[in-house]
Structures are given as structure tokens and as C-alpha cells.
Length: 262
Image (cartoon, rainbow, N blue to C red; front, top):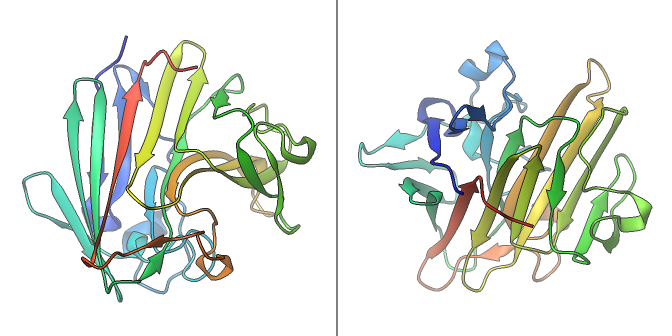
């Protein structure tokens, strides 16, 4: 049985999703940091949790992209938008019978290359597991080592589908699949990204108390993506989304809570 989703965002502070609630269950992990209220473009990333819109890159420069440090405009009809140096992004979130959908339009010059991630930091127990397509190609980023490749759920022997307990490690991965489902005891959350003609993936940030080096904390990111790399500057041909001749790239993020996903 599916559960209605209540979504709250903060357009004044980077468009961050601050709440993703299904009944009594809050899915988003949050972290208080007073610096977040005062950031401007060019500032170092301030991790406040929630769901960040990372575009045109996730890692690299600027860290977590350009949208998180800029105020967004709310049109009062469900759409919010932000203008950055080389592109503009509009997001429209609406409830559905099965959960919620977020439609995106990125406007830029034709041929503009970018990576986008719905960088959702989830509040998960040590018993939580992550279900992705078995055998999917996985790029593993075991900091500080370079990227290596393998297959989901255990590229190079690193088991990624189990999300706890804390063990002092931090690892990122990008998996060639468009759908993820989180199981946490009886609760379920599925995230799916759709886009015509663009590379799709699911990124994972599994920080089990291994980051940052000073004062580490636990944070789990499950991140539907356009593109297949964290850092735009490291992308090979086919690794990024590309704005078509129309000047508009469009995609959809679908969220479903309480689903009977495998």
C-alpha cells in the first residue's frame, strides 16, 4: 500500500527540500548549521541535510553545484526556479495518488553539458538496505582512492546495499540504473528518474561516520541522477546530460512511499 507524501522546500536558501514525510515517517535527515542561512555563490558547501539540487556538478567546482547557494523564486503555483551563470532551472512538485512527482526544465544553450543529482540525505536505521538492479555497472569512489568499477551490490567486494551500522567508512558510488528502493524495517521509499535521451543513474553516498576527518557524522545519500559521474570535469562522452537543440532539457523525479518494491 502506498502512502501520501508531504514535501516542504526552502526556496530562499538554495531550494533545498527540508521535509519528505510519509505519515509519521520523516525520510530526510537534517543537520543544523547556522552558516547555511548566509551563504552566497562561491562559498564552501554547508551541509544542512535534506535534499539538495546538485547541478551542474556534484563534486568538483563548485562543490555540490551552483543552485544550492542561490535563492530560488517561487511562482506561487507549485513551481520554483533558480538562475545560475550558464543555465536556469525550474522545478514543479505535485502530489500524486502514489506519492509525488517533480518535473524539471533546465534552459541553456544547445549542447550545454551538465550533471544533476537529487542529493537526498535519508534518515535511516542501521537495519536499512538499498535495492537497485542486480548486476548493474557500478563506479565506486572509495575516498581517497581513484574510481574503480564493478557490479551492484558488491563492486570489488565492497557491499553497498547494507547501510549500517557505523564503521568509520565513507564511500561514494554511481550505479547505472534509474530506480532505487530503500527498505527500513517496514517502511519503503522508491525514487525513480526519467528523461528521454539522457544518461540516468543512481548515486550513493554511504558515510558511516567516516567523513569529515574532523568531527565525522553519519549521512546516507540516495541520489537519482542525470549523468554517470560525480564530477563534471571527469566526464567522458556519454557521461553527462546534454541540452538538446530546443534549449530545454526535461526530466522527472518520482517518489513513492510504502511501495511493495523488491
